[in-house]
Length: 434
Ligand SMILES: Cc1ncc(COP(=O)(O)O)c(C=O)c1O
Image (tube, rainbow, N blue to C red):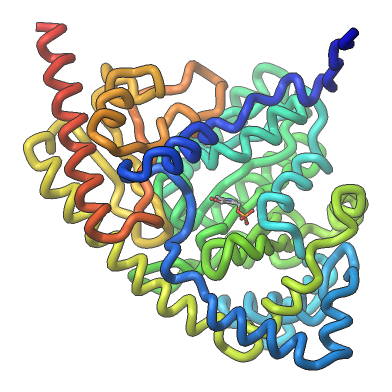
């Protein structure tokens, strides 16, 4: 007789990933233009650079054997040193200024693992994480697993609204929950899902705000800076990171990745952690996987050191800037008749456009727009997934669109199909209410 499976409470409270059905759909119906998948541009993946680096590592037998052996849990020391030197160059500080951070730098299996581990290290059921509204929906999964409360705080066209964040903290204090707040999670560079970046003038005040509330709470509240799209700015130089405003590592946890700028198949990310978190994260990471692929770390170290990584990112920026321009101009063209009812962001980097429809339109999988989009042959990610469940029911009138994967012709066609589906949906809603 088959006995029931008693899954753990943590597993039972974790919902299935919200967009796996979209991935399946895009594979099953290749005629669909997917403005949904967060994949990277297929044609630009650095095959020759990677082949060359792999041949170089494996062409030297001792180096090859070292790369094919397990590494340490924290990761390759020379690579960690290079990453910190690159942070010094990015922020124009004297060489060696951040040297002490090398020991606080942890290489991880994608930045997904780093942010997961931070959650695992800090959160018990009932603990609170303040996230942007909207946020990177994949991070809401681990929070659910931990049994943590994700509470959203609004953004505007300049990123997190500091007065609203202050009000969120005030409210939590008033309800007696301040002792449960552990983390503020932000994506300050070309955010997934909006493409919006945190304005320069809000950066220092944000770090100070979190520090002040940490003092008020009487325990450390961390600011998790997820810069997954760092390197992919198409117009101007990158803004200073939040981490650079806290290089001693009291408040800010920096998470970065090579997935978007080099290869998601490599799955290499890293975090620069406050000192007090390093041991906890390493202990947990040891339980997960001992350490991230040593071979991949050696390979990335090589392409960073020989300049090929930077050359690749330079080329990639050109490719994505072209796609972004093609997509935005197609949206401008096809949505022109709907201009007063539909808004969208104009990203200066990253891979995403966030679209807002009238509140009456439900963009969810079961709503009229998604059904029409399927008929037209275009898909997007319903915006509702990107909103934490508290403090009120999430809005349902947004869409996350990405221009990362389709080529320029497909992006233009996707925009046309989407506009047609939106036009029909709005016309039906107007007719229904009239
Ligand atoms: C905001 C953000 N953070 C983290 C990740 C995780 O990427 P990876 O684990 O491949 O580094 C992604 C991937 O889409 C992302 O968009």
